[in-house]
Amino acid sequence: MKYLPFLLIFLFLSCKKDKHPSIEEPVPAISDPIKREKGTALGDGVTKNIGASGGFLELGGQVRLDVPPGAVEKSTLFGIQPISNTHDGLSERPAYRLIPEGQIFKKPVKITFNHEPFGFGNPISRMIAFQRKDGVWCGVSTVLDSGTKHVSTTTTHFSDWVWLDQVTLRKDKESVGSGGEVKLKLMEQILGALNANNHLDSVPLAALEDIGRSKDIVVKNWKIISGAGMLSPKINSSMVLGDAIYYAPHNITKTEDVEIQVEVESKNGYVSDPKAPNGRRKFGKLILLTKIRLEKETYFYLTIGGKLLDLSGGLSGAIMGGLISVGSQDEKGNHQVGLSCMGTETGSYPGGNAAGQSFLGISILEGGTPKMFANVYLECGTGEHKYGGNTRITSTRGFITGTYDGPVFYSNKGCGITERRDVKIDFKIKSL
Image (cartoon, rainbow, N blue to C red):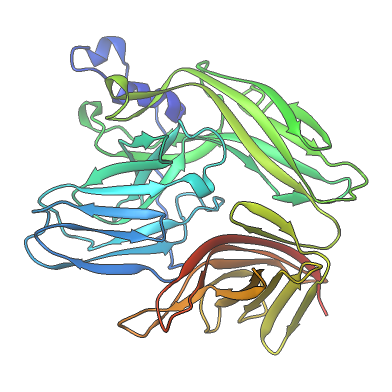
């Protein structure tokens, strides 16, 4: 069966009413929609009772629900739970399970995603999707607010939701050592089916495919815009320069991020966006960016507040007693990090203190006084410990390698949060 890229298909789906679709907007060829499994929980979510007068619920500044007056007739439990992203298993972004599922709201509820922490590159092709009961993910009309770094939509039903890039630049490694290679690939989202009359209410999605299955797409100007190494563009399966290989230098003496850029141009592609001119957010020229970290043999990097810190001078790591433990600190002891995973295998360890979970503590010296942050806090009222973040262990043989991504919390009170910071940790440590 022939495929057409999602970029071109969106042109057909949001036609003006005064046009005759059979003349100007032919029905495109499509592929079969892909059914995915349901995602699994990643850390704790949030819940709140909202009644007929309306209200809102927010999870860590990442997802917000705005419930208008009259959406529900009585007090109803609303919730946001981060889950694994089954739409795109290679994405670092989580999906979110929204409750109550199975209830039809009398007025549309607004769902808003903050894409800034994960939105590296051009956001013009971003859209929101939800998962149907049969496992198929479906794209929906999406409003992009470039000023606030938000994408939003409205719905009368809840399920599992995520935001995605229709055009995305992928790499097979986040980091590379001396003389190593990283494969880069441009991908695009393919449509899974058409609705009756090409009406864009929800559009089933198929697979991510190599970019360039239409003459509408032009790929050019692969280049390194900062950092060392070499870049070699390659022809992909669609016969366009959609692939590339990055070659790291043979002698890496310092931590360095290499930034790579490529241009993708689409004359006709767009996303249905009610706030854009004529309801169409046109793609035009996309500038896609990615970063590759040049790494030494062992390392420990802490990114906090958008600032990358190299804590590779005080490494420690061990696998014993049923635990994976890693830690490090900077030379002056201003930042000290300890991470424990309750297990000995590779895989994901969501925040928690039970088997298969992880605990992170970070001591930060500010003004001569240390502050102890952790991926847990005590919730006022319930007295429950709330955990966040997720640790992924990718290797345990010889070296312990992995990442932590998520929030840490500080409190100088008996309960609640005084301060929250979003952090990312990347490490490779010799195992004892």
